[in-house]
Image (cartoon, rainbow, N blue to C red; front, side, top):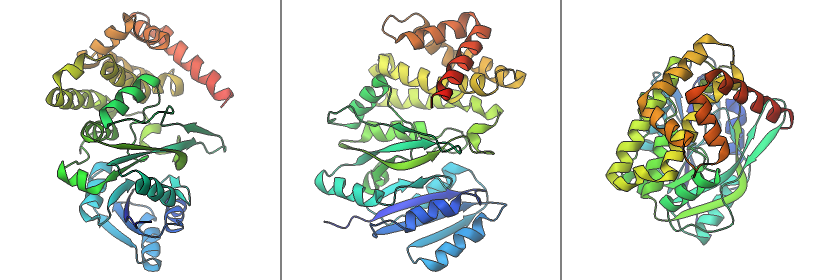
Length: 337
């Protein structure tokens, strides 16, 4: 087997309770040809001391210590230093299967591709987990086809962490994570898929994605959730530059509507249904024309699945019932998780 070197980039910020588990899963890989770059983004807890101790024990690890600049800046700093043939971004509160890199290398050996999408588990502190599949039993010719099919089939994941990408492609197209916004993964994944000629799919779960960590970005109420509106603009501008017709495709509209709904508009009603602040943030997004046009489209689209039509119609015409529906649905769903 050809030894592909895989650069694993781990951004770190105040994760002293989790980072050892993450690094243990990386240094313990059965596949050894790794370049491990840990970027400490101004942690104020004991995270830096922990990652320095791993650096002292494993020559493959390089630790970069920088002032706090955010997740995108940390990932970008790691990319600049990467020496591997492929890049993999692993968040420091998550972990990977101990044979993940070996499986990745086997797929890349049998099917040279620019992007490999990995199966993953989402897991909770109570021990429960949910598997996120990445394929539907058919090969795909390119990234745009995968994007369209995955969005339509409801299995698209915006996360950068279950994607392994060829370093040469990243540098050829000067891909960078967008700084200054939350939920930066979607735009980067969208860009990458539209430029990718060959996509590989690895259904076996390689990545374990922690849910609802206390203090994490996605577990708190914040005004910056409105950054989803900036992301819509980035997606629209990039789509228009690649193919203006994409803006009118149902799959593109579904990508925008469903992603914003799941990232913010469904999140707060299920977790903070009685919070005035949370509901104001959701209403501000729903009433902003950058998103509202997608809500109107799905409220009246015969092509859309019933769940999207119903949620969009209620969001437009009966917000209190929208909150009750979302809260009830996820409460029931979590009982049987």
